[in-house]
Image (spheres, rainbow, N blue to C red):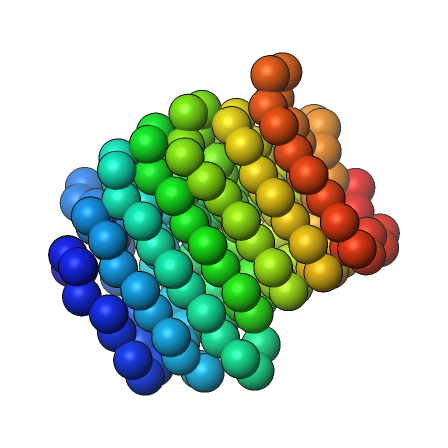
Length: 178
């Protein structure tokens, strides 16, 4: 599915899509304003549910915190969301729960991504080799968010910031991340 310069109003549901050989959601620009959008049990190479491609921009907002990325799997990086080189994402009010990936079970931010800004997100029970919830190779801002029970097999129970990354965390709660 490809969204180009199309604002989407309303709820979206992606469930049980196997995209290991195709891009789950490639884009140049897209905006999603929703209350109950869900991305559940999707599988992909990178970005189990959503990939923000080079020069792409995703603006995803939910007013109720009922929008979810749940039980998505990436065989590579970014179990739920992968932000590619030159891509940007602005996200408010989403939940990331029980996602799995090699690097960044919920979110993977590629080196030289333009922007990754997450506000009022809840990340719970995600599992990765590094970066139980988020793996950052670029620039990331996270504010007013919660990180609970995320697990890394190696480093960064909640957030792993690779050398040279710029990560800003403001007013966030961290509980029992390993």
